[in-house]
Length: 464
Ligand code: AMP
Image (cartoon, rainbow, N blue to C red; front, top):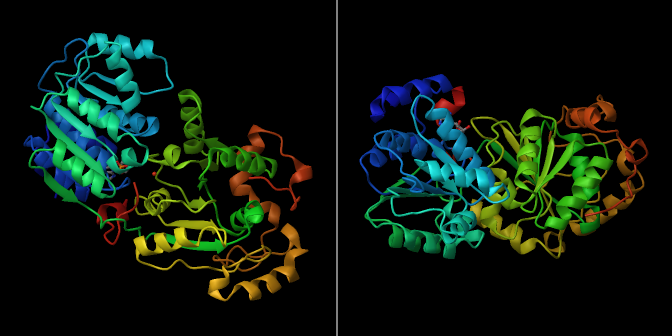
């Protein structure tokens, strides 16, 4: 199918052609015609499938025909995070560049004045996080009765973040005479119920099996002591061909500590979490996109929805408590037909049940390769613990200089001196700040989400 077959206007087709897209992605192919026919749509699609364009393109088409009134936006997109909201806004700029549409981004962490001025002038598209929207509504700065199209994006993430009561409140403020689109990577019961409550006779479109992971992503698991996690992560990064990576932590305090540790070990690392002001988050994301930052240490909330196509690795510094988060996290790599690799550090006695839940969800085992020079400690139930402990003792004293040889990628062999192996992820750091040379080989210091396409990687992404 071609974009021309979807019933989009010439202006939109021109903007799409400027992007160099050959053909619609499966979710676009399925959703766009229904949206153009004013149907409610439930889209089961992960990030990386082109789902943002699947709703922004037809919305541009529909909204182009009307005019916005002051303080009365004509459409509303609810996003769980500021980053995702910013990306949706970018989509409107990209695909709507030949159309005259006004949009406003209403997210926490940025000054309200500019946002209020825009709303006062009238906007066609309002992209908002639930909290900031309710805040402005309660101050009487915005009227929601003219919303004709409502989009709830990443509904499962909204659920995880506890936004559902806010969403219910917001939907209660809207006219029932509206078109509603809901997108979610997974469909837990709570979201199914919400769908029945908020949508009227929706068309269901889906592009990937529920909770599937991309075949493009090679997954590995390492069992280690909690106190050795930093060294293990370091050793993995050293043996992998890491161009750039997300490093996910479960707790905010670990994000800061790990980022500091990585920087001290000469990595171009930066942190990203919900407590940072919006401008700092945006700058960090830009630095990551431009390659100035190679390791982005983040929380699920901050990492979710970040649209960077070429991320070579995802590291789960912690096993996520929620198995769905694993799918979201590793979906940050292996996008748009690229290969990706992901490693998860698990602690025996703490993470077994979370690891089993993940394996059950993704319906596959995760390879557990040996890594030279690191302290691995498999759970005793695997029968490997003793063997590993013995193995560890033998090589413990070697530390980081312990001549790492064969890892999952053989090309990372001894031929590469360590300093060279380190360079892909540290070059940028070297430009930005002085490396702490003393700490570089200090082994003993401690501290401490689009998903892919499941089984069907569409051809257009393979060729792209
Ligand atoms: P999303 O699932 O919205 O996060 O989109 C993932 C990526 O796919 C984005 O970088 C889009 O620019 C890109 N994309 C969206 N639609 C298409 C298409 N039809 N062909 C190629 N790339 C696309």
